[in-house]
Length: 439
Ligand code: S3P
Image (cartoon, rainbow, N blue to C red; front, side, top):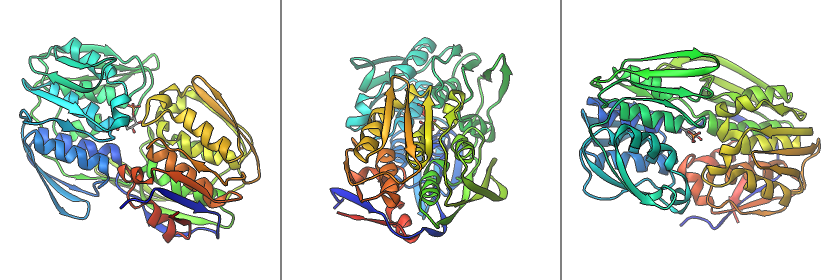
């Protein structure tokens, strides 16, 4: 049974070397592309979190044979396309899972019904349904484009689509649908977002070009590619590495190394920001894993100072603002985080929940419609609160990290949701010397 509450209390310095789980974005994509391709895709280092397991189950329902062969080791036997599932596809908590699978499914003349948990049912799907509809897919959803919804695909036309927001999920959904479109598909990004779909599509045999025009990134996919299975070695997730890294930076005397972390520049905005705050972060052993650069990151306790985070950096660290806000709470001075309105439509309204949780822990936070400001004193915050996470894994992990170095223990509710992205989080933090226990 999952604990009702998890508690992190201040303790000794953290030390040791650990590996974080496989990257969530690449894990979802490896299963989806594997199912769409012909042949056997072998995957190593797959994140075995609930979000990705839901995608594995979904790909099975769409006709692929998905097999676990060992820890993080999976094979996907794809049929070179998706078949109509005979039941509802439940993507659990996973926005990435459902949006990418809808894009993939839209290319085929099949009907599929999607649902998810309470959080996913509140999240906007219109951002994906709109371009898929312009390409020729049809759908029926709950009010406001919410799940559950039924999508009918097939016979898609090409499209030239300017993304209304910086979203790798929407870009990826359009590109995956475009694989079966009759003409080329072009997606224009207001700001570059994570490019795992582009890199992996190429590895699986698709033909696409990427160019930059007037600060906008333009991606064009040529139709008619037949995807062929390709091995995927999933690198460590920088979004998960962020938690032990910030824990080491704020806990006096700590030194922690995380091995095999993906260093794709469209994902490393947090590390740049932490360095600007004065963090002692070093990267060694840079190498390649399936077309992505990885390295080992060492973080040592540092006295941090507040910074203004450039809004243009948001897409490269959109999931990391909650843990950055924790680092900011220990820093001396103001940390200004703006241009992050997208945080409000993640697994929870992350601006509101971080503001509420940090304030409950004695931190001075100012909320804005599209951002927030954290004012640190350079001293550890008071802590000593029970934080409501609304079932958001990153809100839970962020406040637990805060509790490791605050004045008093911090508790979080619904800790079971941490398993969506980082099932080993609490045991790993304990291996590093952190006191995180069921309360
Ligand atoms: C993801 C894209 C981001 C991110 C999510 C994973 C992806 O979402 O927040 O956790 O794998 O494409 P948006 O595309 O909504 O920004």
